[in-house]
Amino acid sequence: MSKPSRRRASLLALIPLALFVALAVLFYARLGAGDPSEVPSALIGKPVPDFHLEGVAGLMRDGAPVPGLSAADLAQGVSVVNVFASWCGPCRAEHPLLADLAKDQRIRLYGLNYKDGDDQALRFLNGLGNPYAAIGADRNGRVGIDWGVYGVPETFVVAGGRIAAKLVGPLTPERISGELMPAIDKAVAAQAAL
Image (cartoon, rainbow, N blue to C red):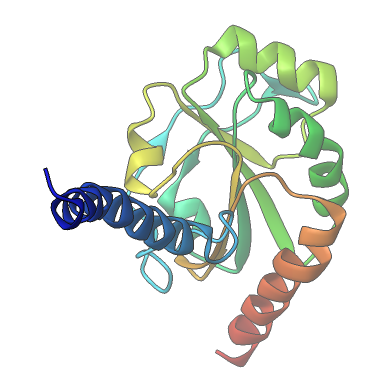
C-alpha cells in the first residue's frame, strides 16, 4: 500500500471517532445545561389532577385520624403539597424544614405519601413528627404519576386549585428562601387579588 493510501485509510478510520466525540459534546452540552432540579412541568397553571386518597392507616393527631387528601382540599387558598416516602433519605433530611414551613399561616401544608406502606409511613411520621394538615396515601403511585412526579421528594405550590410551582428534589434553607417562598408569596398575592 502506498503512503498516500495509508494516510487516507488512517483519516477514514478517524471519521467515526470524530463523529462520536462531536455527539458526546452535543449530548453533554444538552444534558449539562441548567440545573437538573429544574424539571419543567406541563402542569404549571393547570388545575390539580382529580384525585381522592385515603389517609395513612393508624396515623393520629389529638386522638383523631389524620385525614386523607383530595383535589377538593386544594381548591381554595394556597397550599403546599410535599411528595415524600419513608424510604427516601432526602425526605428525612428536609423534614425539619417542613415542620418550620407548616407554621406559615398563609398556607396549608399537605403530604402525598408516595409508594409507601402504611407501617413504614407511620414509623417515619411518628419518629420525625407530622407537619402535614392531611396526608394522602398514594400506595401504588398512580396519583403521583398524574401529578407528573419524577421521584421523591418533590414539592408543589397550589393556588386556588391550580399548580403554581413545582420544585424537584429536597428542600434546603437556600431553596426555601430562593425558590419556594417567592412562589408562595406570588401565589398568596394572586389569591388576594381575586
